[in-house]
Image 1: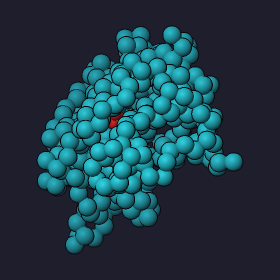
Image 2: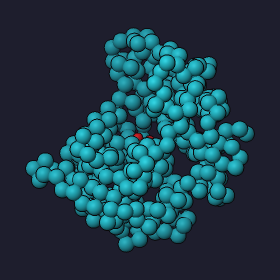
Image 3: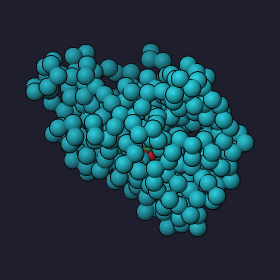
Length: 321
Ligand SMILES: Cc1ncc(COP(=O)(O)O)c(C=O)c1O
């Protein structure tokens, strides 16, 4: 029996058109993606609504999924409509109404060597219940560690693509932050300004203005980020998009992370280790508590994703329609 501790409620997954029991293992050890990180993926969530489970912003995730595949020069064996059907089927087969969904295109078994010339692209879709990504405690206040190493620069890779191999840098950064006793990492970019978390975007609030950065800062412009910008404006908040200096982050009235996995969570403590010569400095944000605008946006986010705000129902794809 596989250990299911970290995959609650998962019973089945989808692979190449077939549903498999979760415990079945079918990918060959010489699959190219396993050796070189030649995979692209999405992270998507579904939430319970009055009309059954609904997937948040599925067309946008699908669009990014195929964009990533293009960057990895993959010829996907399925189109967007087929991926949508596979995702819905996976959620239904697992009888999940609240879950995280992971579609993955990968270069499969064929040849070794960096160029996957004889490797077909295969599709895998899994879904499971994934509650607080950084744990319940972090949902009430996340401590972050500004890493000494910088985010890879947008001139080196297309940051819009979710390329598996690139995430090794996020993994190492995230492990470093935890080894330093923090909940999560934050990367500065090569210019020394705030970029993003390993899998999250960053917002700051100052004098009532809700601000985040954009792709010019070497970030992935997340779907949650875009949604929060729109929701904040809709709530009558002032929003801004532009570079975030490190000092602006350290001196913010409030700060928060957004992302499909973390959703919307407050950043309440920052350990700045970005300059090894200067040593580490710890500063609280919002006196160590969730700030009022962060709390309001977090609450609004959950109303939106659970179908309680009619004008944002356009962002939901019902699994059972
Ligand atoms: C590097 C990175 N930044 C930001 C995000 C947040 O993006 P989204 O809100 O689309 O999940 C993600 C997650 O996909 C990510 O991997």
